[in-house]
Amino acid sequence: MSHCWGMAVDLDRCTGCGACVIACQAENNVPTVGEEAAQKSRTMHWIRIERYYEGEFPNPRVRFRPVLCQQCDNAPCEPVCPTYASYHTSEGLNGQVYNRCIGTRYCANACPYTVRTFNFFNPVWDKPLHLQLNPEVSVRQIGVMEKCTFCIQRIKASEIQAKAENRALREGEPVPACVQSCPPKALVFGDLNDPDSEVSRLARSPRGAKLLSELGTQPKITYLQRDSWDGPNS
View 1 (tube, rainbow, N blue to C red):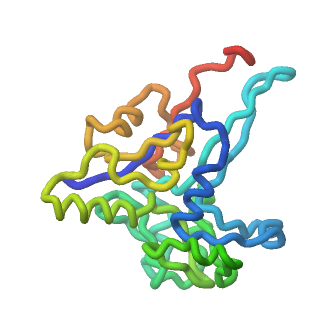
View 2 (view 1 turned 60 degrees about the vertical axis):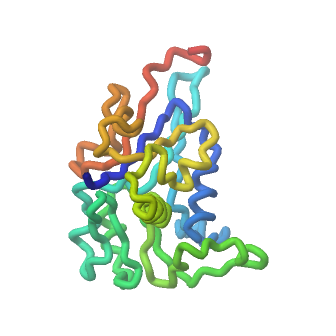
C-alpha cells in the first residue's frame, strides 16, 4: 500500500512558541533575510505562526495557528507552473523541483495559503552559522521558489532504512523537524492511508477542520479546533 502523508495540528495545544519555525529553518537550510528584506515582505520562513483572538473584551484569549504548505490533493500551484517544477508525488506531496524552477512565481500567486517563498538573493550565512547547514538538503539559489515538503529528506531516509531491513515503515517514523521540536506535541504526522495511525484518527475527529476548505483544494493538514470558549477559566 502506498503512503499518503498528512498532518494534524491541535490548536488547543499550540502555544505559539515558534519552535517549529526555527526547527524547519535549521533542518532545511532556510536562510535569514534580515530586517530590511523582512520589511519588504521578503521573509523566508516555510512555517508562519498566525495569531488571533477568541472571546470578548475584557477577557480575550490569544490563539495561535501554524500555517505551512497544506500539501493539497487539488493544488492550484501545480497546473500553473510552466516548467512543471511544482508537481504531485506518488505519496501525495506537493513536490518542488528546484532545478526546473525559473522563478515565474505563478505558483505563489495561485496558492491561497501564501506558504511559498521566493529567493530574491543568493543566501548568505554569517560565520559561524555556515557550519550548521544540513548536508542532506540542497541550498537554493537566487530566483527559485521554495516551500515545505514535510521534510521529504527524512521521509526518504526512513523509507530506505525500512527497505534495507525488509520491513514496513512503523508508526512514528519518519518525523519532520517541526513535529519533532514541538514542545506541547501539537503537531502529529503520519500516513493517512493507514486507518489505525494517529494522524488518520485525528483527521476523522469531529474537531477537525481544513483551512479554506471551501476552495476545494483538498488539503492534507487537519486543524483540530477548540471545543468552546467560555472565559479565562474555561
